[in-house]
Amino acid sequence: MNRRYREARKGWLLILPLMIGCMVFYAISFGMVLQYSVTQGDGGMSNYRALLENRIFRLAFWNTIRFLLAGLPLIMLLAYAVALALKKYTQKYNSLKTVLMLPYVMPVVGTVVLVKFLFAQYGIVNRGLYALGLPVADWLSSDKAFYIFLALYLWKNTGYTVILLLSGLVTIPEDHYAAASLDGASALQQFRCITVPQMWRPVFFAVVFSLINAFKSFREIFLIGGTHPNSSVYMLQHFINNNFENLNYGRLSAASVLLFLILTAAFALFYHWVNRKEAYRE
Image (tube, rainbow, N blue to C red; front, side, top):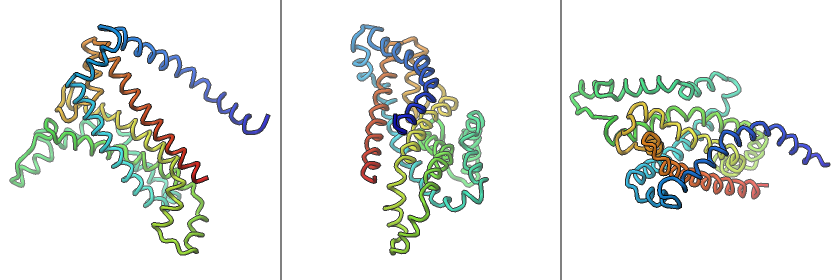
């Protein structure tokens, strides 16, 4: 029995309790959801056809995709830039990590109160605009709500993403940069040829957690806008939650299965792409 096999066996034994828990509480539940999606209502694929023809579902799906397409690139670019700027200081000032995590660990209720304090009808922003003689806006009940919640997502989760990327940056040997400097490589060339190739794994995990946190943003949107917020921030979670309240299990299950398939396909493609990059580097 070679060493690699023994290490792999130990790893599987360590995660076995977690896998059993996932099977009991997630896999079985998802199997039931999959069954409901083809047995409730008219049965078969009727729930999926009705879902794709539903205008509200298409609105929720597009808003969710739009939020992800805007939020994920922005948070990765911003977090990458901050992580590169702070790389030299993380060992000296561990308090920096605490400051970065403050928005992330802030309670949801506190975040909601802060947003309403700033952007409610009589909030600080409108009071400031009124004092300057400028027109006030209905920030949380108009299309501007999309940009407010996008900014909230970036503010709340960028620090956490920075820490994930920093954990990868500090593992890159400084000897690589020193050797490149001796060879006359510029800072941009060092970033492109040294940093980027060795950061695919940390970037992958940062993207995964940023995507998870993007879906968690529904909590703030729901608490501020309710079950039927402005159409610009009506997300898939709203659609699923409202159909759950209406006991429309067929449509609810079909929406959940479609969301699962889309996310799984996106993760699989990105993971395959990262593996190819890693294999090419090696």
